[in-house]
Amino acid sequence: MAVIHVEFAGGVELLFDNVKKLTIPLECVGGDTASKENKILTIKDLLQRLRQSYLKQRPELFLQGDSIKPGILVVINDCDWELMGGPDYALAPGDTVVFISTLHGG
Amino acid sequence: MSEISQITLLKNAELHHETYKAELSAEEIGRYARQLVLPNFGVKGQLAMRNAKFLVVGAGGLGCSACIHLSGSGAGKLTIVDHDRIEASNLHRQIMYTTADIGRFKAEVLVERCKNSNPLTLYPPEALCVALTTDNCLELVRAHDVILDCTDNVYARYLLNDACVLASRPLVSASALKFDGQLTVYNFRDSVCRRCLFPDPKILQAQSCDDNGVMGPVPGIMGALQAMEAIKVAAGLEVTFAGIKLHYDALTGSFYRIKLRPRNPLCPLCGAASVIRTLSDDHLGTNTCFSRQPEVPGNFLLDQDSRISSSDLATAFKSETVPNFLVDVRTPAEVQICGFRNSLNLPMDSLLDENARQTVRQKLYQKLQEIPGCSSVTVVCRRGNDSQMAVHLLRKILADVPVILKDLEGGLYGWKRDVDPNFPIY
Image 1 (cartoon, rainbow over the protein chains, first blue to last red):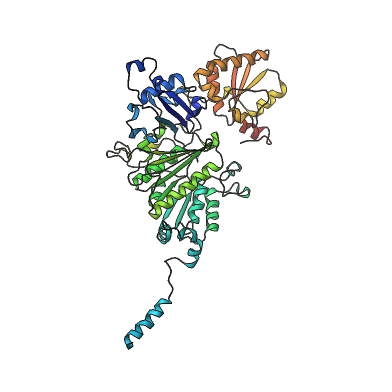
Image 2: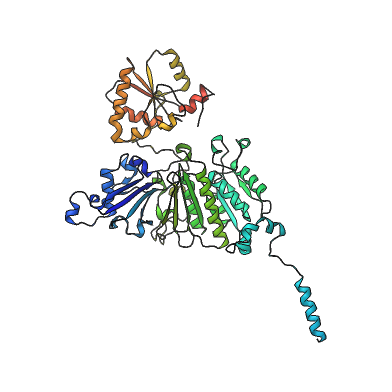
């Protein structure tokens, strides 16, 4: 089964019940109907899926509207998502998406 | 053999016996021996280090580690800025300080340690025991070649970032919190500045080591990495973490190496149509590190009638005329350190979480039923900030229950100050 890997770091994991790694079947990212329609699934879809099925605490600390909360860097296969097309990046089987909080402590 | 060629031979022989050395003193050569023999660094790198001026802002866990490495490596000039004094709770990670240093200025002590470690630097290291502000930052940055961000708050980090872009200086930035550390070099050639990633500091929610904790080795590791990158900048080596961000998760032992976006042409600071041309609080927000932004609408500060002082609470404990129970809104880890017996732990996170409110309500109901005639609840936190916000939230959650909600003014800190000087604080 085609899956994607999702990781949380730098404190983002606290919003996901302290889970640092998830493996999500690609077809589940778009919800029930997506696989039938053969829809291209993007990071936007992933954010919605995470909000609906995985986000446990205070969604306002992870999302701002439909997009990611400023301060959280989205990393697709070790690259800043801005290099990959941002929220519209089309997810492919085996992709690793990491959400990392920017730290300011010292 | 002719006379002339004999003379030439003699001269050659004399020349052969002359010694030479690089433009370093014998002492310097002895001290820097182990890095001088490295072909990638060598004499050229050492001379570059001697001519380089480093500005380190923050003399905490990152700064301690970064500064001692920079001075040990022969940094020509090292200026350390920090207005804080050393506290006992710093010592587990701020490894250049000892118990005897508690109460002294960090920058002053760190400069002393750097001088002791290496008295050969071109200029003696300098301590500035002042806060970094919009007034002094740009001048300081301009007077140095390489800037190290070892600060601990969003305001100072953006202030330094803005100054480095305005003065065209590379900014070697590291951070540490809990079990995590990060490192990147901003504004070096084509690498991004902080605002290319997140333009507006005013909307960022930051956590501090004071409130959230940090493992000792993490800032040490990150500060050492920072010194290494700063040395590479100064010595003209390839700066690998320019445009690359490192994230270190000590708990799982993971290192993430992230390729960052290129400079953002729309960046309000370094972009083509930049709007930030000076250092100003308008672009930076307030120069205060709030532990948590108020989530409740309007002013979350309580009026005096809704607060109880430590001494009044101590009196109430003794008299027991009005049954009262305590709600402790600190994290479970903090509750294990110290607190009031028989208090109900409702962590702030659970009060702020809409989904957890039903559980919170049930726990409170249950507790109220256990204490017959209980009409008063006192909310406690570490310093008396969260408790005020918690009273606001609990008033909503318990809107239909006739109970008086107050908070302990000054939190556990206040209790120590006014009632029990032996009570521990952290």
